[in-house]
Image (cartoon, rainbow, N blue to C red):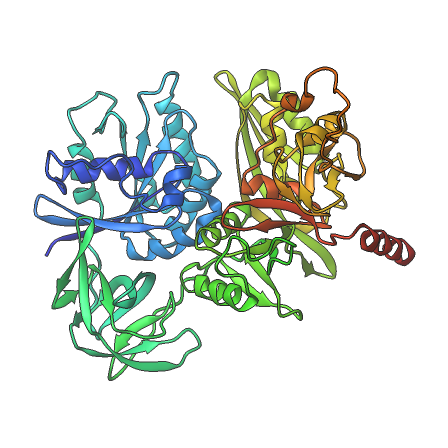
Length: 602
């Protein structure tokens, strides 16, 4: 059986999932008249809503009697853990680059991983149908990038293909063709067949699937030997021990689904049912003399957040799972498939520290949990510091911003306030391309300010570079907040009178509790307000109309914006129907006492 395994890697929004759609259509996986929709691979609700890929998935297509296993990967650096583990299954990569933007930070990150594993790259310059795109300059920039990443002679001699996934054509030159066959032919020609070495059976588990009636399913590429149904095997654990097991069922990938088979030979990607208690990175090996494959190293997390039970006055109203045991079990279950995540128990049984790659990584986890019916409270995201040579060090990131020329001054100003240093400034057409070195702490809350300052024109991307000495305090948010004084339902009558004090995060008629953040103050410092006072209905005639219908609409904030907005003494209450901001200490006397204590200690 002729096989090719290929992973599609690129920066976010450079067209990976759209390309997979076109490959699926070109190889006739579906009937011609079947309704399939766009972005077929982004299957879960969160991916569809946000228009991004979060989990790596694989499909297989047949073209000219060759089986091509295609692996779609996410583009955000927060989900880098997904990319690192699935590259182990591939023998070649399609590196997609946008014909206008050129290589971006995440392009560099995924390419570096692929080159380290000695994979054969094919460069695809996508979106050449865009106005003012510059495919030739981008090609030179990609070559430059390969060179910086110490690519071998063989890798530098890469094939380049131009085209547009959206219009559905690819060619080795810039002349449009009918379809994407030149791309598929290049894959067959340039991607090597899987290397098959002689010896006992070996397969590394690189991802897992879960089915409610088969349990956990291990997925990986068979590196040598043949796996058969009912074959006894040994599982080489991460800590060096071995457990015995037996393969109950074997599946290979076909089209969008799986197909049950009796045996799988080396080089193909398969799914195994029947092995208990495995983890990603472990090796399925021969029963008599098991040999483990080297474990995939995954980059460390850079940020942590405290998850705890919901202890607000409104707990248990909306969620099904509210106890600390529910939350703990759910977090440990997530660890099984989410490689870059870490969970740590604290001294308090109700609180857990969750470590992740970034705000998006953690917010996707929180959003998934809240849709499953969990109620929880999360604190402010903190960066993870390290002691290096006796100095306190913090993570730094490389930030790339593309922005129209007239806004570049505002961007530089914003980033330097947050202790960023400018490295590169050059113009790309009408856009200015800026690169900065900035502490990760400075990135928290930067995106919303940046978009406000540039009228939504800025395109920013960042990725972790290294740990460097601590930069000192970074200014947080400048305004205080409005806090509710009592627990009741807000009224339009009292909110109207408070409009000149700030802007609200809630509407009239919503229930609030004392200590909940209901708006942003116009000045620094917090203000406790009463937004629940009803209009007194006396028999005195009220002159004029009711002003309650002239309240400005509330400010809508997404989960990520809330996470970036809160300060040290605040947290977010998350339930299936609502996201509320609140102080950690709800009672104002407790807060005043705590502040006095802190001042005395300082």
